Length: 109
Image 1: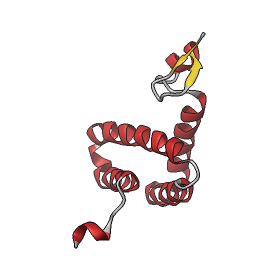
Image 2: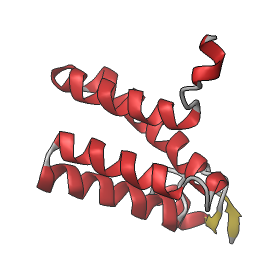
Image 3: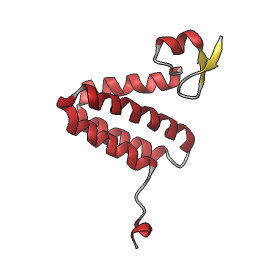
């Protein structure tokens, strides 16, 4: 049975229940993040996602914003779980939030 997953996309109910309420695509993105973090380290992960998100914004803004929202939720939960990585997680959250609300120099005038 197909249902709307927590991420807003549609997925088989059994798959969504087994993967934190996410569809296959969103779950795949999260697994990629976990693997990249293990292999390349924290700073490389921040830089990689920042460049990928900014490069994708004009083309698929809705899809990217959905993914960014999931990442923010994920890292906010990690912030309370893993205090030893607080600086890294705060960098990631700052980067992710800056893609949702980009800096506008005109607002400062």
